[in-house]
Image (cartoon, rainbow, N blue to C red; front, side, top):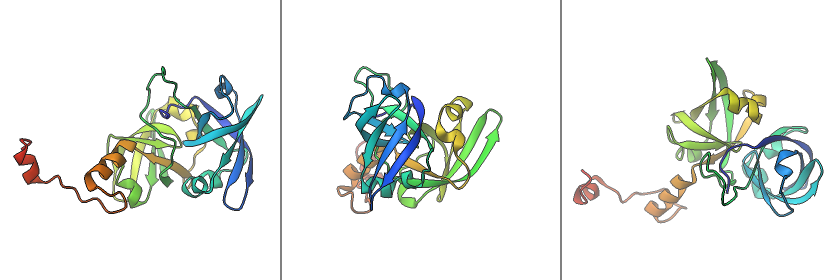
Length: 216
């Protein structure tokens, strides 16, 4: 599990693509401290398992499902990546619950500055937007952010200078893909209410139900 608080930005130094999978090498320093082979590291929000370590980085295997769901296949060498080690049991929970399992990608359609903040508008599919709530949490390339606005086609986040400076957001441009992980709590609630995550949710929570149980 991760929190969406980026520890370091590293660089994709090599990507060996197979037919549908890949092996990546990422150059970094800080997150190597205490890291062992088999540990989990989130790279742009993607939970990767360290397969080998060197003095200046690590390697990881990327399965086909990850390549399909994420923007990793579009990342160029030496692309900047956001890095976070899995949260320690005694760590501080600075962001929100981030699993490192990407739900899909969005595309940056607009970037503009408003005094000390930079706004990013992200276009995304309806199946992702249904889980994105105004003032709720979303992880973009592994960064825990608060959703400022949501419409039927897109959503917006407002980023403070520190976050932009210390993450790969500083390299993002209009038209770039970005990894999206929706708030995991919403997905669990939906399944519990609908009873079957494969179907469109049909909530049994009605106005009559709420009145009968003293909520209205």
